[in-house]
Length: 218
Image (cartoon, rainbow, N blue to C red; front, side):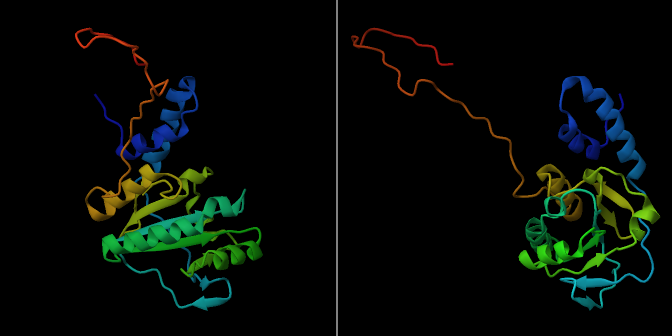
């Protein structure tokens, strides 16, 4: 019996809105993941990185063991997609557990640079970002249109080992951290089961200690 790729198993629950769509979604996700996993990402020449969109920085893409590539296009709500405060926390945490062997690359193709500048300053995000006005990175690689598949974990050869956005989904986050560190995330979310008793008080009445009374809790 053929088993599904672990990345596919992580991503499947995100998309199932109803049971009837399950098989078709599973097929689409499996095809997309199989297509992209192992693919080498190509980077344009003469990239310029900046901090806060005011000063350019002498940042070169290093030959690190892992890279997290974040691509954000001009479609939809940029603030909703970026969530820079969460990326800031994730970068700090990843650096602490992975001895800074991970490089984070942000490529933004914005429709409004003023909005990007505001978001960067508002969230105190001083990590270098590349403002890709001509969308060169996307043109080279032809990324999926779905924003869920526009963030990638790359190995030292720039080949995709995992895809999905760790900021938007905690299961993807755990997958990234496990791949990077070789062990489970110690802060991994554990599913919890809750029970509710209604009413909060159960009146058994008055009875002798030798009697047995029963009730059903739903």
